Length: 367
Image 1: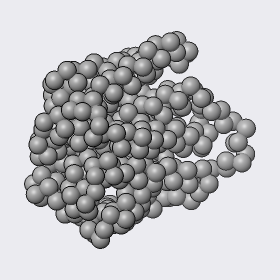
Image 2 (image 1 turned 90 degrees about the vertical axis):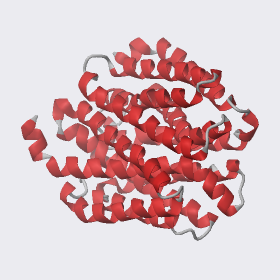
Image 3 (image 1 turned 30 degrees about the vertical axis):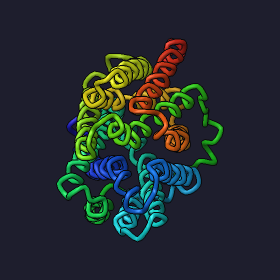
């Protein structure tokens, strides 16, 4: 393992820093929404479109990898996120802010396709653990960014400017992670085997995750928390999120990946029920632990089911992004009408349904 880390040190370092930036950018949407709503005279539901803009940009970034993936380098995806952060930090108007979410999301989506399969392949048998580790570092940025947001006086412009500066530094370093991976997708096309059930699970799992991250802070405010407390709880959510992914690097080999996925959904359901019953703040933090297992568990399951074709990673992530776009988009207009804890009752219903469906597919998915 030590030799593998030495051989792939640049890829690991740049991948970790990129995922920290990804976590920082995404986690800022939640606490920034009420500020943008006041700043631009919007309803909270309309401001929630920024979350969907991010995921629409992700979909474009991932979709572009089907066509241009063999030309895309780590530096390109970092520069895309940096440009998006600049637009978000510009304060130039609501449309510019939405454009920033789209552009940041495009770089974010492409980065997931560039780094996850490289890590899985480069570290051989330890690949699944390293994918969990890489995605765990997402939590470092996601924990730190809301705290920076609070320290800067709940100012989204200044906080996104910090993200833009980090992206600029990372763009200089990203060349060390290598260039584009040149693959012959035409020659390998016959080997692409989409597995629709696991792609369906990826869709709903990432849809739930995106909704919790993007709309969770607003739901906490409706449940009685202050804006500052909601931002701090989001940081705690991502601390638990990070703990779960670090844990997976140690125990992922002990249980089948889809069993882990099912357990994570069951735990999320119980946490949502607890939040709906009254303990919204602490339960939201617990939700972060279970949400942290959604992506690594479904990604490893899907990769095992679908093989190593270059379109596998974009297909898995595209399925998740469909959920990431649709779930917040469909729910945002109804957030105000859900009542103080209606968001958490709805989340409990969704995660409970996914858990029951997962149990019916457990043997097939683990085989």
